[in-house]
Length: 176
Image (tube, rainbow, N blue to C red; front, top):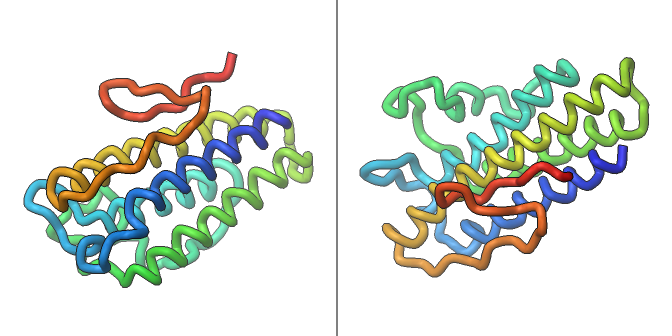
């Protein structure tokens, strides 16, 4: 159960790094698409959409916190069919709500307040590792737009002995 709490801290660290990459940008910089990539705002919404989708489908059936964003943030939908991005405030609220749900559900699993707590602990550990690595995957793309296209400096990598870089991407390495 302590492993899930450790992974939740790593999830929070990954989300904080994401915030460092975009919170100082203008709304236009966040929502404007780029020639060869989706807008930063799309990546922000997609990170949260995937987190909710995985929590919902692997640990607890629950409704989307913002159903109107589901199709827009799904990478299976071609970019040209996704539609306009929501406001930065709405993206922020969506991300925060999903993170609260991740914490609540994983917290329930860690506390044994679910059926099959041992089985869900295994799933929860793998799920959080995937969510963290997915967050960092999109952080790399956000970083490239931030630095290369917008000309902003990048923040330092998050400090964690559990992180390394693989092919340029931050990844959470398995705990020994």
